[in-house]
Length: 195
Ligand SMILES: [Zn+2]
Image (cartoon, rainbow, N blue to C red):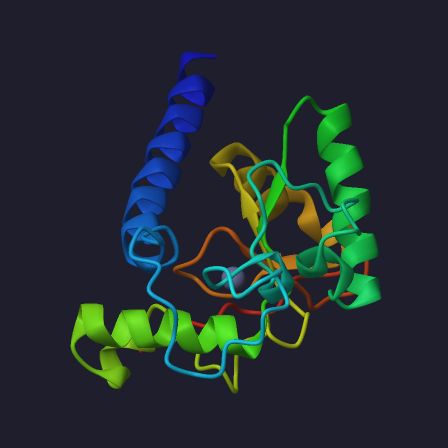
């Protein structure tokens, strides 16, 4: 008994370590929204009167967003099959007592470009930035084929059970990023490790 318990604890410590590393990498870009200087591109005031960008129309999601919040563009513009899988997973997690939220779903290309621009400033070059932020032409969030899930307990649940719904972690350094890349109950393909 003690042995299995300590194994679990070790697992948690590893998850925590990976998480804090991963978050340091990603949220450094996505969470540092305090300097919301508008991008130099053409601001099309979708969010009502030229307010600061990115807004809900670009896919920015409020805290606590559910996969059922289909009135939000970030959820509405997801690939319908992916959205349905995440909804099923959300219900199953709820039944297990694990709260889940979608932190990023679909994201406009403009939003992704802004994230990339910030990352380039932060890391000094596009090459380095691409380790932390997908290129706007390559991001699966822009095409609606990826979701970022939180909090960590929900990520942990999805990593263990997401394949029941076809959902898999696809980047080894992003425990929160899931895509529909297997059939329900199938095996998840090997993860991509950014070089
Ligand atoms: Zn992601």
